[in-house]
Image (cartoon, rainbow, N blue to C red; front, top):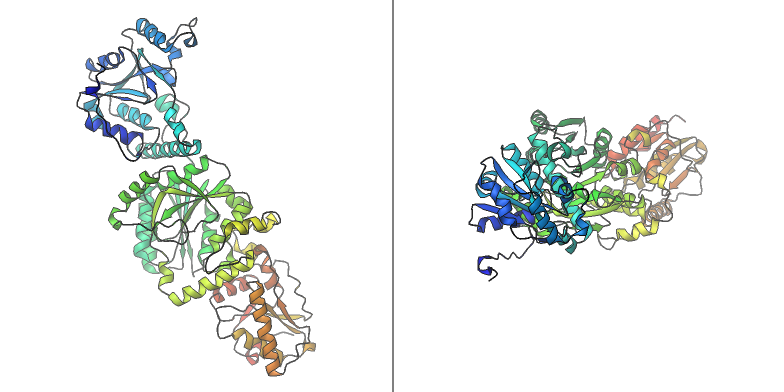
Amino acid sequence: ALGYERIRLCCETQNHGYARAAARGAELATRDCLIFLNPDTVVFPGWIEGLLEPLTQNDPLAASGPVSNYAAGLQNVARYLPAEISAKGMSAAQLAEFLLQQNRDRLVPTDLLIGFCLAVKRCVYEELGGFDKDLFLGNDDLDFSWRLARAGYRQVVVPSVFVFHKGQESFYTESGAKTKYLVQQSTNQLYEKLYCAYRGSPPDGKTLWGIEWFSPQRNLVSVIVPVYKDPHVTKKVLEAIVRQTPRSCEVIIVDNGGDEKTGQVVADFAASLKGELKVIRNEENLGYPLACNQGLAAASGDYIVVMNNDVVVTPHWASRMMAAFAIDPSIGIVGPRTNYCAGVQIVTECSYDESLLDSWAEQWYLRHAGTLRPTNRLIGFLWMMKREVVEKIGGFDPLFGIGNYEDDDYCIRAQLAGYKLVIADDVFVHHYGSRSFKKQPDAYVKLLQTNKMLFAGKWEVDFTGNSYRPDQVVARFAGGVDRNTLYIPLDFNEIFSPHVEPLDVGCAASFKILCVPDPSDHEHSWLRLVRDYLKAFRPDEGVGLVVRVEPSSRDWFVKVVSAIQEMAIKEGIDLDRNDLVVEARNIPSNQRGRVYRAANIFVALPGIRKQALVREAQACGLQIVEPSDLAHLRPCLQV
């Protein structure tokens, strides 16, 4: 009697969003017209006839919608009630009957039909490709109405049909943060479509649909890509950025002393890029942290992406990640998931061919849509941050030289500055993974070990193997850190310069030699230098040696001091003198230049840090010498 024989059920095992569910229903439907109806609505007699009757008479008229108690714009029922009548004074059924009698044959042209109840000719629906399935939650109706208008079709509100709408009741089955995140993602994705259609100058919601509540994140995105050789992969990475970021975006390439082929890839990319491109070229490889800082200094976006040149982004990556910032203003940095990284961002069950990456990433999104996860650590293969984070804590720490652990350091500093880190579990990107380092595995191991020590020394970290608890580090420093020490200037020369105030290292000598033992120097060149110095110079000659212990951890300090003591005993050298200083204080990174300024000459000892340390010493105006022997070194001294 209720016509249940006309009902067809399609039960999905997973929520793929409204647009995909609607599309599935349309595939099963057999009639010439389709009506899409939310599950939190109540309809009244004559509603179907009222919506479909206009669609049978006018070819350009392709879609219709009712009025409702919970609708914006021209579908708001209050527009169609006399001033002396209030909807609150009637039941929903009485209101439906009143509107039916008062508005027979009345049609109101509109630019927007809201999707709680929407009737459309099947042929038009199929011609336009249906609802956009990429819009998981919300904005599918805005998009569909916009495409109807662009295709030359008319849409009308039918004031004689009233549908009671409980108002996004299904939204409340999920957390408010999750639904807000999903809606913002869909809003951003629709903006991307408009951005392309209007060639970078999309109209606002008022112009397109007569509404004020279309609020995409239109902000400029700056994408910083430090590049070091590997032209083949770099080309894929840059092409993916162009293809997958259809919004206001500037790309900043920092060519870190690359080869000719890589330079050509960058040049070709510049010619094809639709948005703004900035290229910074370095004569030598300055390392990842400094290259990132150069990019950060050049960036003008409100959202800033820092990424490796071996990461391939996927559809809607930027719009989906930035939506996280709309959920909680204290979120400072967002990171995606990937196939290759350390930590909890890794996806171990990857099974895609590279040519199918985009579709695999979209399936991943559907399984994890709307999932944001708090974390204390993000891996720096790719992340997006708000500009205000950079304004508050600056750039990456040059302490980490070529790179590794600078991302851990940045995450701790960001959290100590009051920002949250989150993982966008629904965004997946492909990471080839440390390709430059893989070509030199021994050097990579030394770099990891050394930077691990530097990181541990800076933050007093207790590692268990290669693991540590970033939450414990943040908790330990949260109450006692000087926030001024968190800031790392983007300009290298603000830290390392001849104008930096020298540090008092407690050495009485008027002329000072500085050396920094490198933990990766297993030949102990630094110890031979100390021995040769002690044998060559008397305390009264005014020549001092400053041995800077960096990392400034207790273990490394004990090793250095013990080695000097054992050497002195073996060589019969008296250490009771005031011209040899072991400087082991944990000096804030933004003041490290003061150590160099305390000396006159820097001895470039072997080790994985040599190039970075020499660069810092030169910037501070020190003369650089090799540790051959004191006979070679003495002519350089102006005592």
